Amino acid sequence: MTKIPPEPRIALVTGAGRRLGRAIALGLAQHGWSICVHYHRSQPDALETVAEIRSLGGQAISLQADLSISEQTRALIPQCMAQLGIPHCLINSASLFEYDDALTFRPDLLERHMAIHVTAPMILGAALYQAHTTAPAGTMRGGCIINMLDQKLYNLNPDYLSYTLSKAALNTATQLQALSFAPHLRVVGLAPGITLPSGPQTEAEYRDAHRQTPLGHASFPVDIVHAVCYLATAEAVTGTTLVVDGGQHLQPSLRDVMFTAADVNR
Image 1 (cartoon, rainbow, N blue to C red):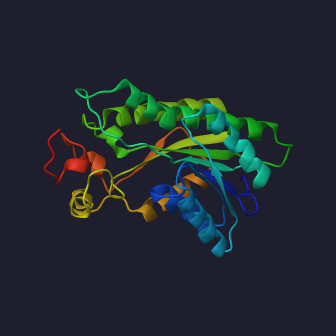
Image 2: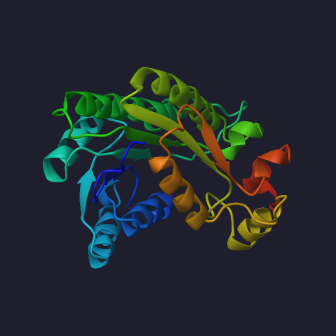
């Protein structure tokens, strides 16, 4: 059996200054991981995340990059290596979530979603693979990439078209990366359900939609953190996706869950 390396393990979490990325960063830190907190514009939030991790006795740094710019994305892994070491785990959590559908489709919006959800994870994955395969013998065990997806891929509706197309591409990329990067890196997907209020959704609409699942609740941030911690150390899991959504994907809907309890005309 492969031995887990001595603590601390290192994780690079993109979009870790706010929302779910922040919860993942803090959750991993509580399990002994050193964290590289990536952010784009949310520097105060990222610094707060780093400070909270350090207050827990953990090690953390923050790195800024616009993931839509390939040069900045490509620099993240080397910058993390210089300050913390080679990441054992990369969590592609940074996300863009803007509305369009087949009638309001905008090519520029698709390009923006693809840059964040597909191009950046592909660049980061290749850089992490390069780091692991060129590290001195015996210094690295197998690493892991976790691509954040969405239960929406298993319960399609026409809302948020560009977002959905980009996440579908990342889903396929997860399988292709798993084949390409083995045996040095495992690559897995994690598909949450409605976890936090988003977009135009009110708190009341969020709570209502959250309850409309077979389990009576979708996913909470703590559920996603538990799933990340499992996948990051699950030595036999690669090329597949774990859906954590309270069964939300089992209930077909003509609209995105965002609008389940809302009177929205688009």
